[in-house]
Image (cartoon, rainbow, N blue to C red; front, side):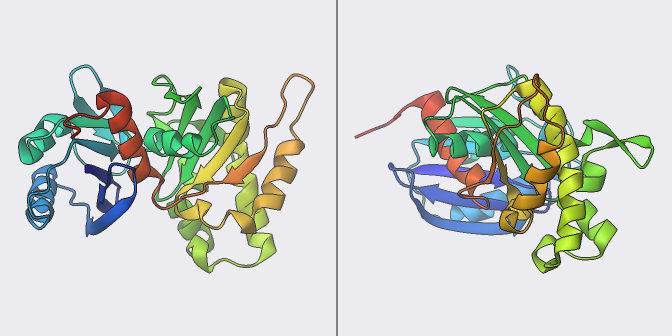
Length: 274
């Protein structure tokens, strides 16, 4: 068995996966803004799992400044945590090897495994905030994506503005007064699609992906804005900048959890296999 922990800005999903990567059970809890409270809540959840013998643990976190070699997550996009040693701390709780990575990177890894013919996949998660990653030949590119949409500065209403401030799930609520799931009119989605496309075009110029996959809570409703987002992107195509196809994540809500499993396998292999 493997354990996957998807730490989000508002909620944390904890799931057990069997040796074939199938989720067998899962629990959610609101992500505390105090890191020590998070560890206490996680300990409670783990105590309810009957001391299951995990081979490895994968954790996805919304980290924006990650000292990977030291295992220190210094800053986060939607959490007040600072300088946390989450790998060490969860290893102490589970007595199991732990692999930690940026959540958008793990989601991208998961979605790339479902598309083995795609060499360069750009994954963008549109949720409370915006995260993105580049998966190159089945491997996470560590140099792209940690900062997420908060530090991608774009011109918006005449001034440079973080992409996250006008195209994320939180921004959609602030601008339109509704959550993505409640928006059905084409005019509003056309406006949202234009805002999303601005950031995608910048990322395409840097990452040169063969495919863009959109996940997260807003990605769940991709069919509502697929046509306008492709329309706006094609308007920017030039002989030197080709626009790749854009499609919805196949597992938008659980991509990170599956990525936790995929990454743990990638890092640790089949530790403790019978």
